[in-house]
Image (cartoon, rainbow, N blue to C red; front, side, top):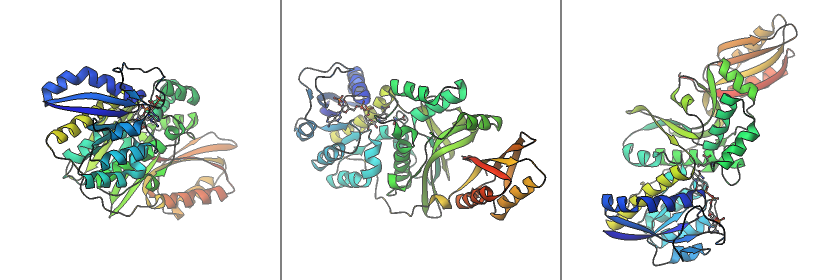
Length: 426
Ligand code: NDP
Ligand code: HSE
């Protein structure tokens, strides 16, 4: 049996759940793996605060740097979140040759390249399964199972808070604010929930997904990000009428030697597997050349599921320490990032127009002039103002934007309303 001690930084939603899970699973893990894992130290901000887990006497401290530097700590588990002091602590641990397990997507998406390089030069592990899609084993699948696959595209519902809010709004007609407050109460939301609702949390995860799937130096700054705060009940109703549901999607693609990474709300056809992903559940739909389509589904947020992902990584790191080896991702390439204007999608477009002869022809003419082909159109209302809901075939984003600008200039168009991307099988 190899005995290893963990230094856990952070004992909030995930940290406390992790310490509790390890205590519960320790004996079984020892039997299964020959590793005896104990928590040697837990660092927090406020040692006087009440904790959701019982901690052994004397292990709680407010000195995270001392935990990282302690010769008694074999593996560092960073569950503080945010950039600093997490970055300095993680770097320091790696530079001392200590493996690090973290669930910190913000850190990975901004400093992942630097941290992976530090781990590689120190010959140790940096593992971050929990950083993307909580309890879903996506990173390990991309690193190991799909290592030989040419992944082309991934569509992910990777933020539990926004999926929970959209589900409540769609199925119960819930108010946006109430649904967000409930997601916060359930421990899904980030400390600042703006990161969830404005798509920054999903954007960080998209960067990490692209980095690992394409072995490329993609960072948060490369991801085009739109959130759900502009999605209204009208949009949800329009999607329902057209046989779709609205989801916040992270999309990463590699095509023609360039990578696109983006996060935005999108209409998903009800018969697409992602449409069935409800509440705080996450899922990632992967398309690869040989594997074709596969989908991973599970809980994307919350203490227990995230702690499960952290524990899997801790056991992998511990096994590597015991066997004096490391994992490693191989080199990351600098690949060009495709601008959002050059990406392609189908679109939903809503227009308020004056209901008189010739208007539809004029509107259709603008779409046509920009090479945007209309797949379907539905008119509602008449005798005055009418509402036109279009779904287009797949078009270049810049062409659609130019179409919208010209439509706004038409006399008969009173208002260009919602424009949403649509997941289309073309
Ligand atoms: P919490 O805010 O619940 O917990 C953060 C913990 O870090 C607290 O215990 C806090 O101490 C401690 N902390 C803060 N600053 C310091 C510091 N300077 N030194 C030592 N400890 C410090 O966050 P979560 O548990 O929700 O998230 C942790 C990480 O896991 C984040 O990176 C998050 O993005 C990620 N994650 C979270 C998920 C979730 O569902 N919550 C899911 C997947 C990933 P104190 O308690 O004293 O304030
Ligand atoms: N705030 C995140 C979410 C936690 O809602 O998905 C998981 O990363």
